[in-house]
Image 1 (tube, rainbow, N blue to C red):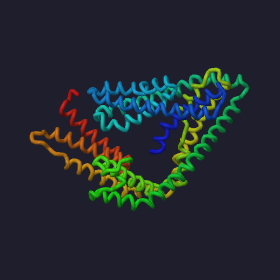
Image 2 (tube, rainbow, N blue to C red; image 1 turned 90 degrees about the horizontal axis):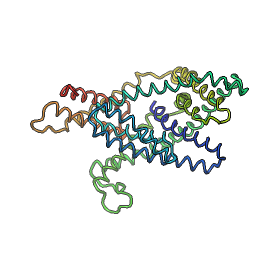
Image 3 (spheres, one colour; image 1 turned 135 degrees about the vertical axis):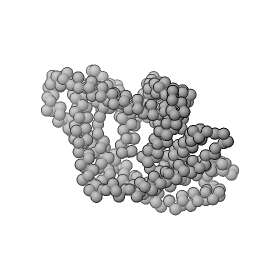
Image 4 (cartoon, one colour; image 1 turned 180 degrees about the vertical axis):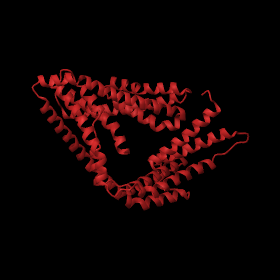
Length: 402
């Protein structure tokens, strides 16, 4: 689920860049080096613009006290990233995605809990409405498009056949990408298993206070600074966590089949086809094929992915994961207890103020664990939501007017 959720963002963005590059190439003559250069430029500039806007967005919104105003500002972020990127000849969508990734990753440290809760609720509503608008708009145009397809002498049967072939091609292309990806992950896991004892020994040296030469900053010949040691220790813990994850949660052939089959087309496919120029050859057919591919994908793949998972994993039992999940929750509880006990209480501090300080320390501990990849992402997200909920309750109790 994490893979499928994460890939959809950048896949959709890069797909639209590729589509725009292809449209330009058909209009001005195709040059492979030129197309690759244009694609690389569009991505590089978009990443730079999106990163700047993401950091600037957090710097501004952390100074806004009202959650409603903060959420309204969040709706301007995609446009603040997309417009400059488009003016620079880059991809506005990629810039918006990068700005969103930066914001989402840094928001728990920069924005109050009430602001993030307001953002999540309002953006979920906006997402549902906008996706509905895309399909509604496509449905309203469908009769006109079908009429144009008939006028082009393509015929509805032939158009549906082309759509089925296009869906098959998307599955084949996806399989051709996922297969080497899984092979690379397997190689990485085997390499990690061989390096695990050595990395663990380096971590033990660091915990014991011994200086590790590798902790020196690149190009520096002197003794590592305290910052260098902390940064290197974080890298060591992150590497060990990655190795543990790859070894304990391997992705094999069955998981690869699920990843391929779960790659459904949706609103972006339909919206992308509608961006084709009005004078594009067979535009009506292409738009219909995109709509049909999205519909067939959602009905066929979406309707069968559940039975497919049950067929591929007949021996899968949720109870088998219970011990591992209990151990993960116990580690999180220990992390929260350590953060609570390590939070000092100055003289004269009220119970509510001290509890808020404890919650802040616990959130920081959870986010540090997230950055190091040391704990399960779902369990960490649930713990963060619990901390946020308690903080919101305390804040509302101390200030009922908001």
